[in-house]
Length: 160
Image 1 (tube, rainbow, N blue to C red):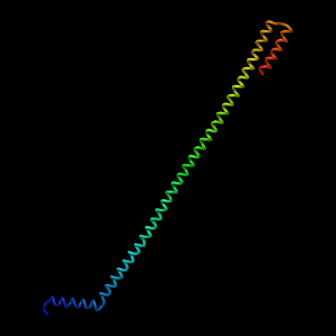
Image 2 (image 1 turned 90 degrees about the horizontal axis):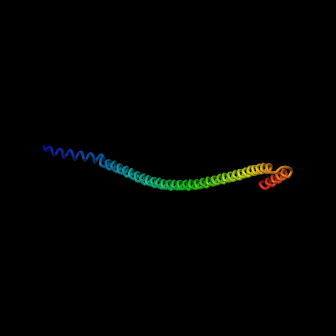
């Protein structure tokens, strides 16, 4: 018994015996089991959260695709409306331009007719005045006055 290794072995056995007597291995096993259970619960909670996150992600992706499709529809509708508005605007502009051109042509035609009428009236008055002067120079008396008056009346009737 003088060997120190023997005393170390006896001490070790006594220590292990005391640990067993006080139930330390059982407590250690329970602590490790409870720790393993807690880790398993955390893993299960993490799996559940992952499934929920994947579901939320899929939902947001679906909503994003729906929003993109709706935006594309809105853009297409806006383009169609803009094109229709452009066609309407061009048609209205062309119609207004045609009305103004027609109005201008009518004004020009009226002005031409009026100018032609004025020219004819002036030409008639000038012809009558010239004829009157010529007749007065060449004819004299009552016969000349009657011829001039009759001629003037005829010319005026024909020109007006």
